[in-house]
Length: 398
Image 1: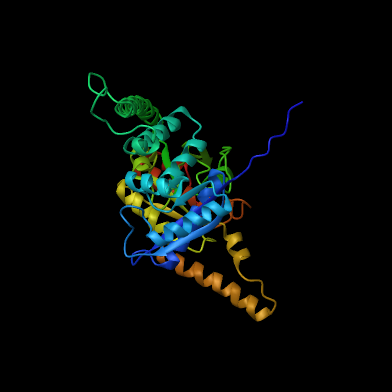
Image 2: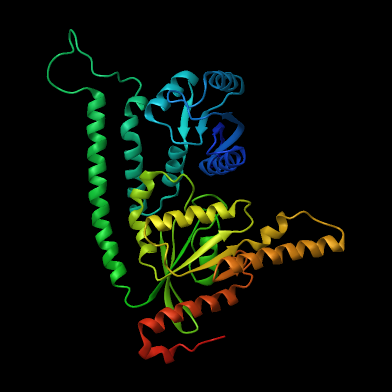
């Protein structure tokens, strides 16, 4: 008989700072996102700590008083780990760990941990492993607290190297090996992309957990894993889709996030190649999220970094059903009319701001057929420009 095992969530506290560049509302939004990241990683948030500072303390990130408050709270409430909203330097992480006597995780470490959980293919696992080793390398001294720095004196002279130096050498060798592996896989994937022929390439882009995979499942026959958690998709999925006799390639890519670790951007450059080589981008946005405008800016920033900001795109404002649900329930008919008008006015303003806009619920498959028709129109424009001699095969639809 198989015994049932209960999974206990790790008890955590979140830590963030309020600065001139990061006011209270922005800090709260970042901590909300960190809360969701913690839940995705398998933790439960017991409390949040914030402190107003002009800049983080170079030694302990927080001030002495706040550190003491945090330390006493950890002891009383049996906290397993403390998660910081920003990336800590190796020295800060070591100092905080020494002071709090508790596991310390920063935003970068948390995202890397989620990526390690989510990676399915050998390629994605290699990418994540490379990013993890690059993150660990400068922190080896802090991680291996039983290893002191190289000492001299009686019994310490002679050939050889210290354990910490050995560990560093092993990690550097691992990094070099993984880089070589990824170069080989990149060549193979480049060949695969070259063999796709003259089909128009469409890539789904957007912030994490906006519904890209759900949208892909709605308009294609793909069965991409979709879940209401951050980074549910980590492996790039490419499917051939046919709309009105027009075949094209649709790619589901990894979601973006604010404060994305530089190690991940570097490691996932080859995954982002699917975006750089796309002919059309479908930028998916969660309109039910209060900060969807910030999400759009974050995605556009990364698209510009990989020289894909000028590509033709369609803006898809997804989860319109959740947007309706998030509004307060009103009893008066006039209030209901006002609510309806406010949604319509939002749609009107977004249509003015963006050239090609679509509102839908991918989960409920609302308006999927109309969306497929709009995508067909855009793909046909690209195809006819590239191959004008066979335009008659794909009729223009209204």
